[in-house]
Image (cartoon, rainbow, N blue to C red; front, side, top):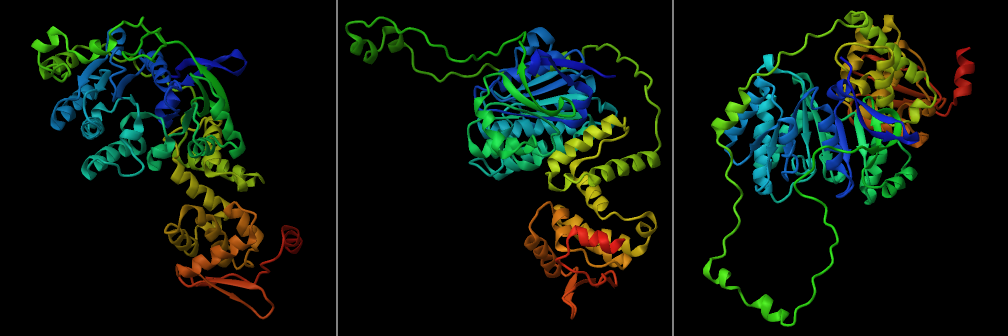
Length: 500
């Protein structure tokens, strides 16, 4: 079932729509400095999607508890043991109730432990309860820090592990992560990298602007635009939002947070003896000892269980698929054709993996590709293999399978270069020139291409030598083959002429 929710207005005053079903499959990252409108954006998303999907909000400041009044969210106070929070989370999944985990009043380490226990309880739910859930985590840099802080290692590891499970493995369990952060640089990269949709708001630090520009596939010179964004304005990109970076203004919300932005008010008129007024306690203060304000007691667990046990309407029957179901072999052929088309694009070699991955997801949607979406690591692997341009007969041979196994132990960005040279060795072709290796690596530097071959030698997977005519030969001891001699300084024109 396709559901589009309106997030606000886009350029040209048209409605900015978000594909909720696509969001559940591809996750969302929201970034912006304090006061940029992140919480307002999350509230708009939660309000618009409340009738369609179960929601869980990890709320460190208690701003989202007001959703309970209008939309019926259960407020779970986190001042409980970790076992209690895990049990409540499991029952929330079982009964499909939307909830807000209120972490207000706890210190940072307690918040991390509470959030970890709650998220792990949802992650470990029985398979029969793996219904779709939108999991919104505000101030995500607190729960997935890029570096160790002042909290204990146990709390940091538990919280970071729970956030990693949510963003990396949660989709198969129906958990769709929506994370918001003030600082991209403070957010763990393995957590941020799993999001395919982005909403980038106002930010001023160069490192955050650079990371935001990289995630959106924008030129570094365009990163300055993030300083000029107004409150509540974001740049959107992703399969659930837009194929290209799109400025949008977030619409109005129906509920409000308990805390509001400070407003200027006039000072009271000065009194004559202001010093004695401030320094002398009043009679009421003299009679009452100074006490620290305690947060209100948490609701009893029995009340929470009673709310969770309330009957829910039966879910609607899933509609019949609109498009014909394809088998796995046809799906693999379609994926291979899409990646091959991207490799044939002459500009693709010098684009970042993030930009190519966004293009790949859009092409998959255009082809109506069914099944589980391909993740970024698998896409990088398919792209590296496609750059080698191997035919079916050679791909079925044992030497090429060994080459694939060897390449799996190399860094992702070097696998395409290794496979191109290995393909030349397996098929007995001349060693590729530096220009071809540099293009596979995404650079124009021939010197860097030569350094890659030196790296392969250092790892013990290849041996490079030069014959009496100055031509290069690369041998692969594990494959039992080597390339034919090839001119390392040849250009594309001479290679094409020799092939003819």
